[in-house]
Length: 218
Image (cartoon, rainbow, N blue to C red; front, side, top):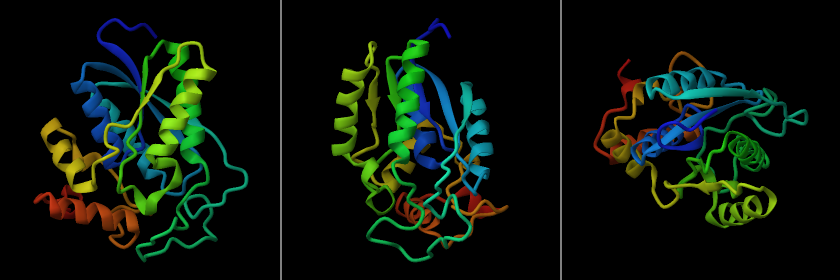
């Protein structure tokens, strides 16, 4: 993949609000984006389909990478583990152990292969229940590892890290993020369940931003 116009970057795109906003922010900063979408066996596969729609709406190329977590270890991967409808202070059952470590490793390899100078991730300060691989400490250390462990040393960028959900939604609105295409619910039904913690934070964010969630208008 040749970088003909703008700086080339890899954007981790999950189909949710945060990654969609990061994609549009990267484009606004002049990056030419290649979206990396993971099919990792998640039960809510609807997010994959929505991620593809978002990439197309943004006019970006995308790649779907299929990987497997044979040991599961999360409600997102194992139907036997119940998704809690309570807001957890500690990592909930939906936490996938070391997911961002794995995703970012693939992204760094992909970035070096195609000559991308940056990898964007939508981690932020309010990320659900303080997942350990969404924290600044982790991202700083991972960045150093990539610099030391690759020839090209693509930078890991998390521009939303200090923002909460309502701030991200407000930013996304200004950037023209197609919120109606995003999907946050951990249950991949036709409509959001409005009960899981992801739905809770999404609803809270739209309310605090003074906006109406287009998914709830259906």
